[in-house]
Image 1: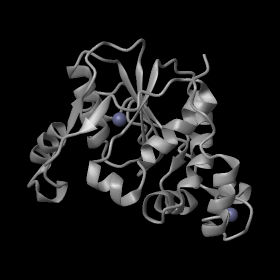
Image 2: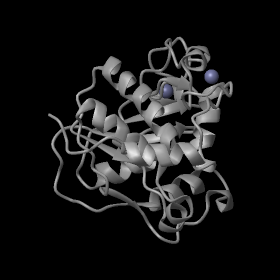
Image 3: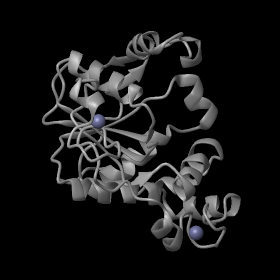
Image 4: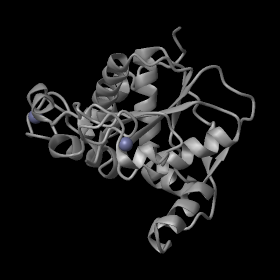
Amino acid sequence: MRTAVGPLLSVAWRNALDLVFPRRCVGCGAFGDFLCGDCLDATPRAAPPRCSVCWMPGEDDVCGRCRGGTFAFEEARCPFVFSGPAREAVHALKYQGVSAIAEVMGRMMAECLDAWSLRVGALVPLPLTGPRRRARGYNQSELLAREVSRLSGVPLARRLLERRKGARPQALAADEDARRANVAEAFAVRQRDPLPGPLLLVDDVMTSGATLDACARALRGAGHGPVYALTFGRED
Ligand SMILES: [Zn+2]
Ligand SMILES: [Zn+2]
C-alpha cells in the first residue's frame, strides 16, 4: 500500500537548501551527501546480541529491566548506536537546522524496519510542543517518519499523539518515579477510533526509553496498539 506522502523535499527546495546548507558529510566533511557511504559504514551498528524488547546490548533474550515489564511498547529497534557520525547526524538535524539530512537517516531506518519484518498499520512520530516546533521550524521525528513512510508504504498518523501544554521540564522532576509520572502526563491521544494494526512510534534517539514508553502508554490507554518503536540511534 503506497501513501500520498511525496518526496521529503522537492528538487527546487533541495537546490535552494543546498545553497544555505551545502551537502557536506557530518562525519568527515566531504561534499556530496550529509552522511557519506564511508561514514555510514564506519558508524557502529546496533547489532545483536541485544534484548529483544529494549534492544540494549546483552546476551540474554530479554534483559532484567524488560523482564520486569518496564516498557509499554512491545519491541524497539534502531540501525545505529548513538555515537560517532550517528550522533553528529542527530545533532545536525535537531540543532543545526539541517532538515534535509532526515532523508538519509530515514532511509537507514526504513532498511532497519524492512530487516525487522514487522507488519505495522501506521507510523506515529513523537510530537514536539508548539513553541519548540515553532523555534526549530519542524519536528525532526516527523521528518524521519515521513521518509520511512515514503520508502516503506506504511501510512503516517501525523497528529495521533500530541504534547500537552504546560508539562514540566524533565530536569525539575526529582526522581525516576516522578519523572515517569511527569512524562506520562505529557502526551495526549487525539483520535480514539482504533487504527488498523500495530503502531510504530518514530523518534530520533532512544535514551532511557521513558519518552517512548510514555507515548506507548498513552496510545494503549486510548485503546490503540500494540505499539513498537523505531529510532535512528540508541544510547547503549
Ligand atoms: Zn563522511
Ligand atoms: Zn530490555
